[in-house]
Amino acid sequence: MPSNAPSFGELLGATRRSAVHLEMRDSYAATERFEAWRCGERIDWADQASWWHPYDQLIADTVARGVTVRRARIVSEPVSEYIRWEHYVTHANVTAGEQVRWLPRRAATGLSLPGNDFWLFDGTLLRVHHFSGDGAVVKDEMVDELTIVELCATAFENVWALATPHAQFAL
Image (cartoon, rainbow, N blue to C red; front, side, top):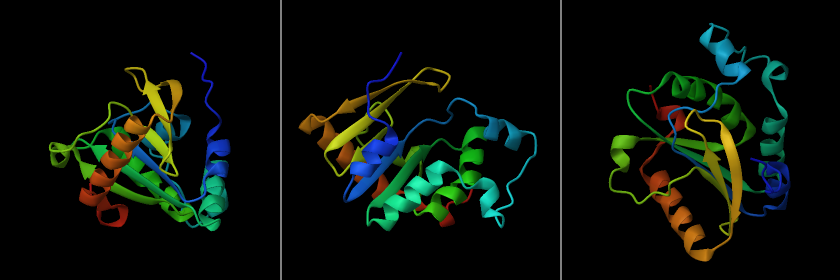
């Protein structure tokens, strides 16, 4: 199903203060990078040119403009193979300037959470991700309805307050 949502780059380019991302799935559709990792390929983190992607540059440029970019992940334990890979490649996110935290799902029981992953830009505009059962993106939906935006903003901040910073989160 096609999406009429602006591109992520356009949304981030228009962001002035903050962009936050809440992820709640234990797996997403497999990528070539994930499959290579599963086969034992590892990244030479000392050779940044070999792994730096346009996404990393977009985040670095956004952070350089003074925008705070935060990502929180709610994960089941023991973590899935996909989450182990995500934890490994999060080095790139952090190098680009994202702040990343992890929350074990068992610690989220008392939280009210939305049904979908999302990005929230400047606390006013949501890009909600809709996935198929196997983790493929089906559609991104733009939402600016105040009650939904506030619910998602509150959910993110509550997760963030309980979550562990990436550098301290051991698998």
